[in-house]
Length: 172
Image (cartoon, rainbow, N blue to C red; front, top):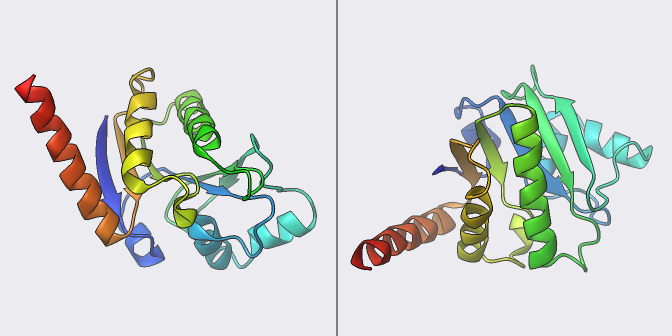
C-alpha cells in the first residue's frame, strides 16, 4: 500500500480528491477533537447534535457512515468510535485500524483519507502508528492508497522512518 500525507486543516482536505474520509472520535471527549472536530465545524455542528441525541456515541466498535458533500469534498464520511479516552491504547488502535480496513474493503474503496486513530492524543506515536497500519494492511490487499492526516513534523518523521526501513530491507 502507498502512503501519502495531508495536513489536518480543512483547506488542505478540500484539495485531496478522495471519495472517503475516515476519522475517529472518543465517547467521552466533548467537543470532539481532531478531524471529527473539524468536520463537526464544517457540518454546522451536525456531529455534536447527533451525539447529544445519542445517535452517534463514539463507543468502541461503533462505525457510522455519513454523507459528506456538499459541505465537505468527500462523498462518504466514516466515523469510528474509540470508546473511553482513558482506555485508549495500542490494542484499541489496532482493532480500529482493522475495522477501518474491513469497512473500506466492504465499501470497495481502494483510496481514502485516513486519520490515525487517536492521532491528537499521541498515545500511539506517529511512527509506531504508521508501522501498525502497514502491518495490518499486509493482510488486506484491497487497499491501494491511504492519505494519512498528519501535521508537517510528523509527516517528515514518518517519511524518513519509511525510507530507513526500505534501506534496512534492501541490506538484508
